[in-house]
Image (cartoon, rainbow, N blue to C red; front, top):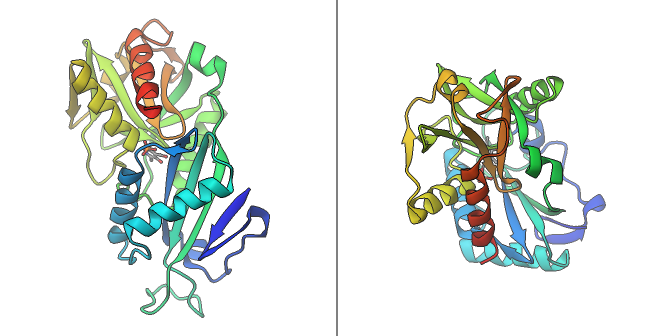
Length: 280
Ligand code: PLP
């Protein structure tokens, strides 16, 4: 695998950054994960716009123009022989000469990128769906910024694993917001529901694609302010969405079956629409 570090392409296992890098010391950095289908990025412009928004949110200057990012991503995909991949990009505030909480004024951002293979989703997951738990959201407030400060996400996901589930759905102030690495949808009274965007939710690119498909297909849908855990528990279908997983059906929530306990009919329809869109 070939990685990119600050202008150079090199084997991933030779890629290095400084221990003084603020991304390493403070999680002072942002990232993107872009899915690639047969060598072609899905919604690259949207991912690069969100990267720009995340950088602005942390007052890190974007080191590249849109055209340079587009060329960088294309070169990285080429260097890794295309196919079905996900491209990971991370931009940190850089590596000043000393560790200091105060933001440095004259340090160039660090740019790291690499690819991972993105195989077919697990057949058992497609057939049976996944389990999820609800879990207290202990993340910082600005979750609309895609920062690499993911410890709360990682620990909540591990709490899910400990209960035999795959994803934790995060609850704050009585509202289910999103998963640890996914957005959440529910089918309630035959309507597709998702929490409305706010500072504590990542504006998922897959989420936006699902809402676009719902509009196009005439599927009744609504972004709501408060999705309570109780309302979620009564849903006939629950889904999670993300760039690497597309849309997964959640068939067990906190150990109880969701609806009939099988991936639902709307999920089947949405999944095929989403795949068609990704392969366009
Ligand atoms: N929410 C969180 C917290 C995430 O980390 C992710 C992606 O990893 C998502 C939502 C889904 O976003 P996207 O569809 O852009 O991958």
